[in-house]
Image (cartoon, rainbow, N blue to C red; front, side):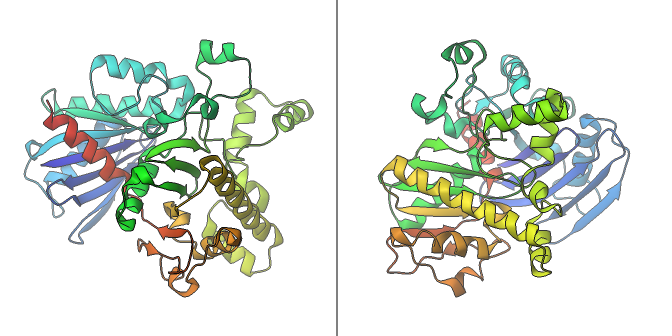
Length: 401
């Protein structure tokens, strides 16, 4: 069985074709600048690559290019779309309506649409992706939606409610939802496998660190708490997001600067975090270069983020009353070995000891255990694979039809 995994953004469409017999990807790529130009790039598992510009007016035209990339030319991997058994879509926000992956129906699409206010850029784009897929593939190819927040649906009320009047939860469903759920789900399960234990017997802190970042407390295979909240803005400092801050700071600055709600959103989501503190970049690689060149603010930005990561890890260990393993994943989590070493060295009270030399080798997709045999807590680097989680859910649902 071959499954196509889709992640549609407001002006992009990422795809990955996976052979579910081997669970290995066959081809993957991205359509970018949809609606204002267009560029398509991709590669196949056997090393062929392509990159070209084409006018992409909408997501339907992007899907047509995906079809061409998969079935025609020097980089073709299948003869026709009939070889694709199903399509799985990543959906950022399922709100309180969806706590598991489901087959796409008109009712499901309407439900996703009703949650646009909670994720205006993401959910609207996901709907465009679903509609475009239906148009290109036709009604006979089943589609499944996998929700980014579903894994976090096990959080208890004490974890997901905010300290605002309860009526706002009743009226507007204002609560903590969490994100990166497919990533946290994948790496926590992989961690249990590596440890040779049942995840139901484990307490794991999973750290997805990238341009967007979140940390999750997974107790007995279920989420007890997670750092992102109503939106992906909450938690600790990220690439361009502020993370959680004193709400009075926002009110104070709105009064001083005269910001509208939309302007406030731009500052907190796109101009803050590592970019805002450093004044250099949101990319950790740029910040490393700037730090090495003596830029204090770049160094400060990296230090602040590491400090906040340690605080979240510590608080989640307290929430779970212990920890068996800590996992690093995501673009920064998988590559910034100095960040991993810094964080672990400042958790020495837990009896954590890591092999610094081996840790420094785990970059660019390499994973493994970085804790030493005498370490009282296991520490792993586990490359995430959200697409495989989506494909697995899609396969299970389609086979149950």
